[in-house]
Image (cartoon, rainbow, N blue to C red):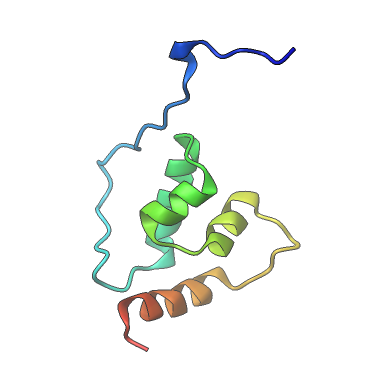
Length: 91
């Protein structure tokens, strides 16, 4: 038998406090500013794909930051900067 969920047991993801400075999506963001936002969203219960969509960041970068895996070695700051320029059409 599979366990049943009650109607009130639906998981909810709450947005982190908006007291930190807002990130402007129209400018090149810095990895140092985005990384804490990723961690906040993860602690609030968001999944990796949800975080990627909300912050417009690649899955590889979000997943590496969350897992902090030695098997996934990329230069996060450099990759993020390149992707930001591509996202904004600068390069």
